[in-house]
Amino acid sequence: MKKYLKSFKRKLQILNVFFKVEDYIVFNVSLFCLFWICLYKLSWSSTEQLFNNADKVADITYTVFSSFIAAGIFYLFTIYIPNKFKIKRMNEYLTYSLNKINKGFVEYIPGINKGETNEKYTVESFKESLLKGLESTKKDFITYHMNPVNSSNFKEVITIQNNYLNGVLLMYSNLLPRDLALCLNDFCSVKIKFVKIDSTVDNTFTSTQNFYALNFMFHLLYMLENYLNKKYDEII
Image 1 (tube, one colour):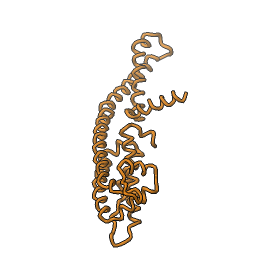
Image 2 (image 1 turned 90 degrees about the horizontal axis):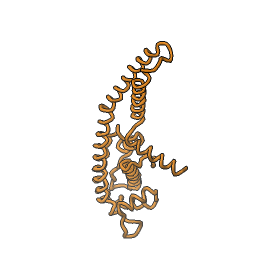
Image 3 (image 1 turned 180 degrees about the horizontal axis):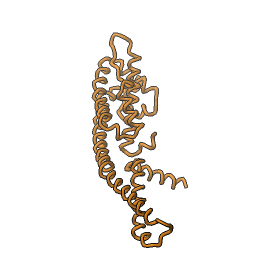
Image 4 (image 1 turned 90 degrees about the vertical axis):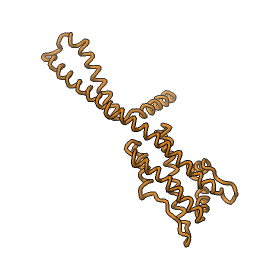
């Protein structure tokens, strides 16, 4: 039974990739109307009337249902199919942006030491540590970020990465799942900002702020990557 339910849930997830709630409503209503009209024309119209004026009621129903089918066809070609093309373009741009952002991490993450050792983080190991919420990762980043040269390099790269995410938000936020679009908006708005350090004061607080902003970015990228892999429903 569990295996069947899991398989059924997976099929629904696959369908949800192609259909939204409004798509289901429009297409199901249109198919029902088409089915009724076929029965009416092929069978019921030649049978004896069940009640007085049944033929007039059937004609009115036929006219209304024909309008529903016409509306469904109109929806298919003016909304559903164009949206699919827009989503295809969005996914291509999203893939391109994520590749550029991930390449940006190579500019500074391999410069972060693991603790007091000379061992360096890789992008993947740093990402894994962040997603696991390891406190040591926070300390390692702050130590790296307290260096003004490292901070300047970090700020330069992170600005470019933010520009790609802003591009996704501006062009495609209406096509993304609502929760994902809200997270993206939070990140790109004033709520999440990377702060430049001031070499004349203690920058522990500023470095901590930037760590949390970077942590938010990694979780957001994780959600976007899972969305592209059609696994978004499994992580929310």
